[in-house]
Image 1 (tube, helix red, strand yellow):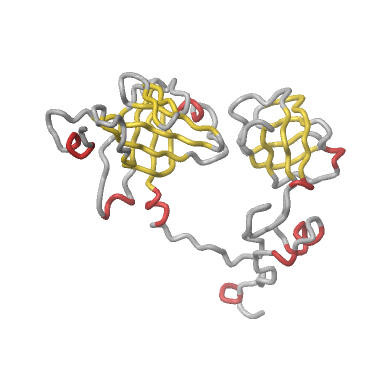
Image 2 (image 1 turned 120 degrees about the vertical axis):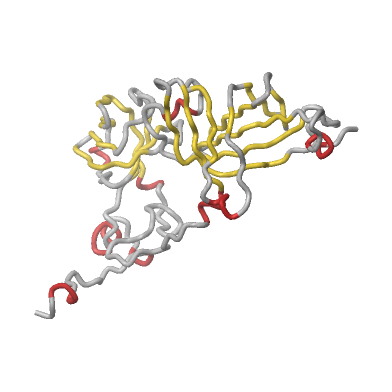
Length: 273
């Protein structure tokens, strides 16, 4: 038996292999830096030209960006070539030793974080994936709530508590033009979708709805793949006002997460008059 630690500390016998696990929504992409595919835990990791910069330990690790370079044809990187996906992707890097016995008995997680950026260079032939560690997310000071008149909760999220099922409309996309789509039966549903979101029925890749005109929705960003003739689920929006949609549409005033009675007048800038 040859242990992982023995091989890892050996200058002559060390033959490290790393596997990369990218997950976005319910889809997982698995790659390895090995010259041939690797099977691990019943999953196959495809051999891919892939390299990364060095790991950083200590106080600077939170500000460090892990950079992974792959061809732009890489199936994960190509998701970002035209439009950024609606969900954040996570990344896990696992280090193995090729000659460990039993084979791959030791699996060391050397990085776990999320994808922060994907840049394309060399005339779009090379993709550089920037990833931040989980610790970096915890180092930022972000207020849980903002002192504002509108609700701080994400619609249908844990704080809001509204069940999205009654506020969903499923329809066929009959036309696509840039960031606008036409969805069958949308207007007849009687729901107001401005400020809501829409996603393909088979892919969890949501898009924010900026406005609605009849059956036509204007999205913040177009879908990465054409949704024409596909079924999508659209969810009604909310204006995040206590006396607006929160009470009148969703009857959810008890969970309102804002400060509805913030004065509109700032006496420190306008005076008491």
